[in-house]
Amino acid sequence: MTSWFGRVLARLRGTAELPERFDGVLGPEERVLASARSPEGALVATNHGLWVPEPAGSRRIGWHLVNRAVWRDGVLVLTEASEHRSAGGAVLLRDLPRRRFRLEAPGRLPDVVHARVTGSIRSTQYRELPMGGARFVRRRVPGRDGTVLQVRPDRDADEKTLAEYADEVARRLADEERGSV
Image (cartoon, rainbow, N blue to C red):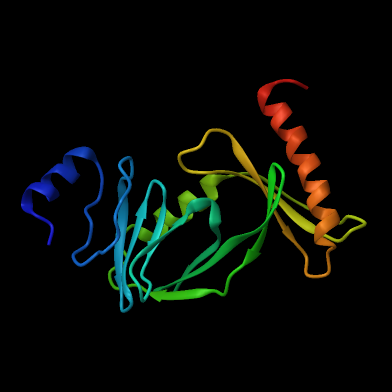
């Protein structure tokens, strides 16, 4: 249970409070932005990511790994990406199965999720390449400087060749960010 002092302190800091029975452990620089309850448990949006309920306890998904979030008819549908393969300065992603959360009194949570997911994206572009098509997305990662290049290959893409290409693109983008080009 959140104490009255904790609620007052959260309001003074301009943050939301943690819901009762939330079992996650926030990082030292992590601030609560919004929360809502679902039948599965609490969802908590912070400056670092979205905490979702799991059978083994709450788990944080970094904003850079929320591929898609749709809010409709009281249900938040999340598609999380996993980092499937490293490609030097880039990472190849695969989508995990969609998860649905029916929110009780959603409050600001859907708006915060939308703002954080779209705010993490610096650029996005789909490219049809000889080795197969892929979506290239530059995203900010909470707590890190710069961006990461994420590549979501089409199903029929040659991932090995695409990984080599993605590494070269990531190197050029890093040079641009450093101002060496």
